Image (cartoon, helix red, strand yellow):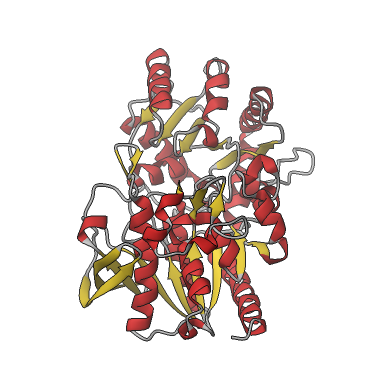
Length: 481
């Protein structure tokens, strides 16, 4: 199949989160299965990587014409097409500046969606599948369905929800400016409590919907996790699937990782111990044989920072060290810096985006904390297991699908999980992990099992996407395509 993958970010060109990892790794896995993927994304300021200009064109929006330059690059032997407009994309950051969303994001990603469609036609690429990702690309299925463009009559649309909490909600006045008529502004279209919702556009107009874990696909049909779209998702439940993300095992491999302190594998756990000592040294923590708990995360309430706040003083009574890397809301920045001030020899707080330090934390930590309130999939727990670091997670979404709570009698399970989202439950999981760590032989066996037996590579997930694409093509044929 010829698969056009449409995304707002993708490694190795631009990244703010897990969407970029998926947008780079899934097309790579699909190519290994014999398909013909191509990736479409905006060209942002300062983007690295070689690319050549291949066309200039004009995109007609509802409020006038916009200049568009198309560039082509390559990664993993896959063509990447970059959409450029100086006004929209020559900016600091992908979506926001200094933590505040750009107010014209509606115009930026409507233009990107329309320009992607026009680029496909201009270059006559004729994809079998248009695979769109998150709200920034939600208008692609809408534009195609509402225009009934015969060029796409044999192209099926798949829309993936990576995080339903971010929906692209804008005032209704933008509708004519993005080139969509008022007839689509209703409960069965783009209307959402008097506003326009780009995520909803993807849910309503695509042939197939999926999200990034089986558990999350069920959770988002409930009011608690649906963020106002649970009714739409129940309405489309016969078209909604869950496919767990994977990680690129060539990229995430402690045996070959070029940025960690020393390479190692399950047969060489002394190498992991050395990474721990070197991490402590780099972050000015005492080089002691105590459990190091790592956390690489967006610092927001969704990621369990409210639970961390509740348990921190109790946790600091234990003989542990805590290493945190990430950025997020100013409240949690201040909270963590205050905690570091109170426990300078136990906590390292690193408020930045630093992929090299992230790898060092995966390699040098004993335990990896993901107490997320909800987690569509999560990649951190998969990477942690690959690096021999035991995850401690809240049993939700993809965390529930990947982490089995450790049973000390049967010696099965790859991590520690807690069901109830409360400080007491979280502390209970932390305490069980600490108690298990004291039996070092038992702990090493658990670490080795996680490194040797778990397989969260993209091969299995890519095969499920093959099946999903076939279902989407079947839906398209049934509609007369």
